[in-house]
Image (cartoon, rainbow, N blue to C red):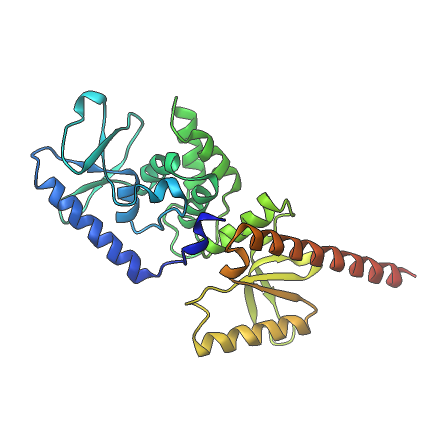
Length: 290
C-alpha cells in the first residue's frame, strides 16, 4: 500500500494551524537557552507551510524539533531538541516572533534524507508551481548546490528528483499521479497543464495532464476543490465540451491511486486507452490517405 494512501491532501487552514503549533514549540525551546537556535529540516519545512512528506521515515519525525549545528562541537544538549550537523552552505531567515529557521531552499536540501524520491519530487514541484512560485530558479540553483558540495545525505534523491520535477504544476496529487504513470507505469510523460482552446467559443482550459496527439485528457479531482456546486457545473461543462472536440477526458480521484493495486489498475486502464486511441487514430489516418 502507498503510504500516502490514507492521507488526504490537507487544506490551507490545516497548514496554518500546523505552522503555528510548530512555531509555538520552537519559541518554548528557544526560551530555555541563551544560544540562538536555528531550526531546520522537517521543522523548518512545517514552519514554511510546505506539505509534509507522505512517507513513513518523515512521518516518524513529524513532531521532532530539529535544530542545526554548524559542526559537532556546537551541538548542545537541550531537552526536546534534536541537533543535526549541517556543514554545507545555508541560508536562514529570522521570523518576526524571534526564531530563526533555514530558508526554503536550504530546507529542501536538508529534508532530502527524510524523503522518498517521489515525495521529494512532490516538494520540488510545489515550489515551482504555476501560481505563487516560491523558487523560480530552483532547478538551476539546486544543480549548482550539488556541484559545489561533497558528501551529502540524500544527494542521490536530490539528483533523481531534479530529473523528474516539472514546473507549472498545480497540486501534489497531480504530481503523484504523473509519477505513477511515468515511473511505475513507464508510460510516456503527459503534458502538464496543457492549454486547450475551443475553436467555437474561444474559451480555453488548462488540462492537468494530457496526451494531445491522442486527444486524451487526465483530470485529477480533489475532494475539496471540486466539491462545490459551481465547480461541479464547470467540470461537467468542460468535460462535455472536450468530448464535442473529440477528446477523451479521464477523471481520476484519490481512490484510483489509494493503494498499490488501485494504482496498478489505473495505470493499466490508461495504457489500454492509449493503445485503443492509437489504433483508432492510425485507422483514420490510413483511411484518409486512400
